[in-house]
Image (cartoon, rainbow, N blue to C red; front, top):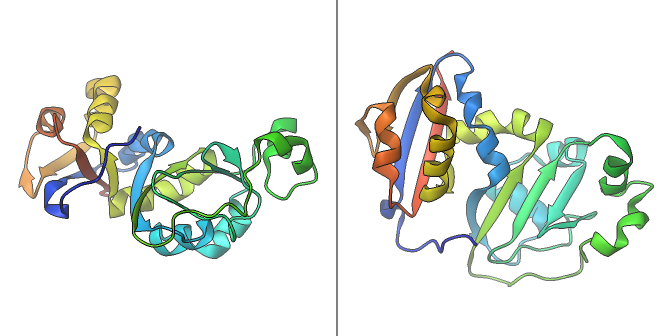
Length: 207
């Protein structure tokens, strides 16, 4: 379960990393675990992804082949709506029959009726909501660097766990690190974010 987003942006710790060459790609797996966006409830999935997450509409229609809304395959993201706690997952085309069945609007889509989302289901209208966005395979590789450079909102405990699982290797190629605008040693990041509910992480490649 996602932690509630309370307080103001001042309560969110900001971690900024500068990585050499493409070393920032080590953080791409975090996108599959989920990044968070604050937005308006009742928006369609399409409008939320375009207006709030900043994904170009043409990219959604041309590159995103599989969409899951709260664990169910979604064919039409222009009618389904987001609510507080919604989880969206985006993927490019996946191989094999499973990929063909899960592909939105595909020939085999009727085969997955039991796991398909009812696109007419309405989310809570109005008011602030917190939505989880997960990016996989080619979608993560193509959109991930821009998301990371802009800064992604993640639970502090999740980032701390990710760093611990990666070990010191994750900091190879880290040229600089800031915590709330103050320089810190990269190896101190996990200690700094311990106990923090939310962290906004930005990762920039120097090259």
